Length: 285
Image (cartoon, rainbow, N blue to C red; front, side):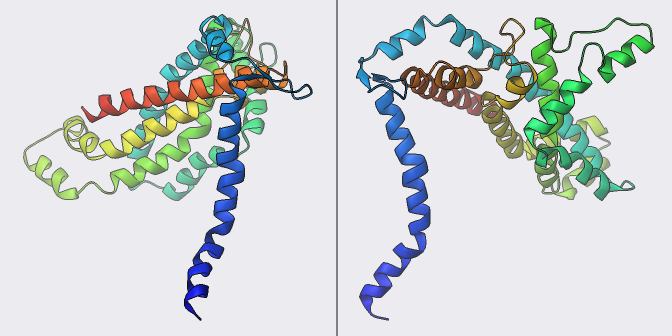
């Protein structure tokens, strides 16, 4: 093999990835940036409008309502997910019967389609025929409008999303827990530390990198909330479950405001980046 072939071969090997990167990542990003300065409904030619799309965001109350709904979802989903994941990981890290079965059972919802899970929970949370309300009425309590009451709709979706995704974070925390040296726990036992003291002063500091990773992944996943409200509520009732991504989707494919939708997407990505930077500094402390 001559020098020329040695030079070309590596590029040939990585060319599928480079083509994929250019076609499905670089081009859409650049095209979206171009769209932010234009008005386009797919059918008509693009019309240059300068910074009008950006100024429109400042006065779009529905968009800020959607951002607020997304933050409400995150404020419920992330703490709940971390608490449940760490608690179950601690249990599954012990020597209990059927441990492999329970690990697999908790992870199973992660690999199930989000649409399927949303339809399932839509039936469970039904006002008249849902199992949860049937259980409440069987013990003499009133029904709850899980998906039709604006005060309950977003918390219900947050609980459902936690149920679906917690298995992944259990696995991550299990990996983190198994990296904690047992010598620390043995030394703590000699000093007479309680289980809570060992958890607070040994376990949590040692798995802090895992916690940080889980928070970041949960934040990115939470900000991309789309399937659950789209399938279960359509953004209702009274826009209480209208997430930012669902609103961007509607602007693009319901109203064909492609330029404004691209602007919202880029602006929302900046919001996500800002939130993650704040989280990083907070968790590091």
